[in-house]
Length: 385
Ligand SMILES: Cc1ncc(COP(=O)(O)O)c(C=O)c1O
Image (cartoon, rainbow, N blue to C red; front, side, top):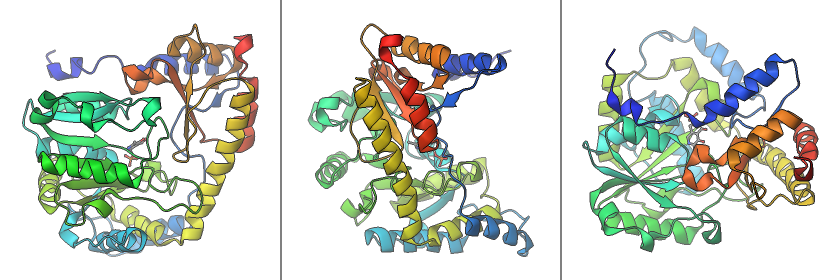
């Protein structure tokens, strides 16, 4: 049977090899400590669950929701941006999504013609590259280096990449490196893209997963007129709602309109009770967010102590629930991840899943209880491998 030949371009699904080994390991009845997935283990706040259930009695709860999202939810997102970032948004600058992944993919046909370029980083969340390939756009990858704190060097981007590109996608706090960007970087990149008429997309999935009491940053603080910026957000990580599939895009109204055109032709709005649950989530006080941050801070600190004792190098960070570690010498990332799984039953993610520059790294997800993380990492003895 003939299928889209762009699918062939996607190459091997990198998580698959380790996934297969994990399944085999589980089949043999052995215990696994899974520090691989970026899916929080924490419970959903009871108020969110109650709202989800109560909304089943709202009139027309079962009907098609509006394509662009419930107005109440859009207003709640506007309130969140005002209170958190002092950024003012109008209703037509907000679009509710079925998870931010939906928007990250659909922004490509919304902005790009076949063959247009998208600047992205290596390493990065793999969806940017796969979506670009699927939609017939060309990914231009720029390196993230540890010596630059995993921020891209804008003056090293080639003219060819810039001329052909319509989108530049960044993601801070960053998956997989954990890097957090500063104000100076945001100012520079907003100007860089505005000067070249490139749409700057900030994937802010981990905006609130930063150290306790720090202020989150929005790209729109540096593009108050929303000249060329779009930001994607999600309830998945901050509110432990990955399975709810609810997120949003905010920013330039022309791009939001184009995104809505794609969306309304491909799918519909998210189930209304899930949208009501999202309103409830965004209405929780900052104390709740700080309690989540506190948990990840504790996990990060104790993981770092163990990694240091085990002589495993890692990038010290203040954001996301990931730790980006160097694989010990004489191992490829796959060999290392496979070995810690087979010998110790610990699942970590090979760095190449995020791009070629991940070959010397592996990623630990702090999405398990602190004591489970400690138990896993304590077994993690490079001298025994
Ligand atoms: C960087 C990044 N962006 C976006 C997403 C997708 O989030 P959502 O659940 O909103 O689709 C993820 C999920 O792992 C992610 O790591």
